[in-house]
Image 1 (cartoon, rainbow, N blue to C red):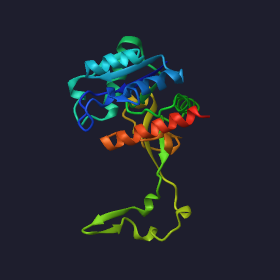
Image 2: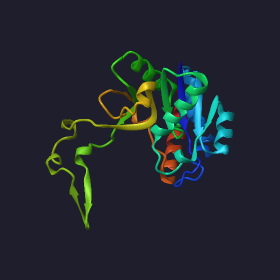
Image 3: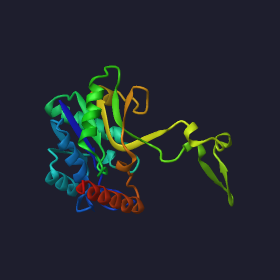
Image 4: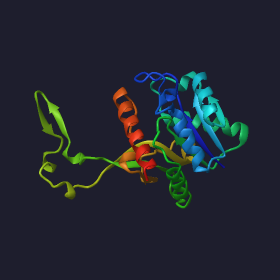
Length: 233
């Protein structure tokens, strides 16, 4: 049995009502629910929330279960993992323990069900691994990063600045879309960013954080261009 857990808190500070705000014509959380449905691998699509509005919108978009998140897990400092564990424990007490749990962020309009399916398949085939989650490459060599220093700049690592980009190791970052894990790994506090996690590499054009109004505008423009490009094929 596999379940999806979509954490969706109601108290977003930087973008008010972010999870249910219309994004390219429909509530942002609806894209994550649609991707979970399209993957076709979930027995339950759960939304964990402290908001009645989010619960209503999520149910209308196709979530199969809403779990009310306690106030202690709904502040600005609670991480994702405790929320997922609470959802697992709540679900297990009523319906039995799932085998695999996929945390899907509510702010991932580019999420594709095929990548979700790939993550599960790869995790199932690797018994020694605990997680599989989405990553993508940086669009600039991070070894050439610079810092602001007074009125000027300094390199983070001066020894790397003269090297050709093709000679620098390609680096990756968390794509912030989905995180598959064995139920036991979630419940026993196994770390996500560790050698026991499988990277599912996404193209950069399908990845955009949405934390600020500028991010929102960029993501919406990217999404509309992506949809238009796909419709012309």
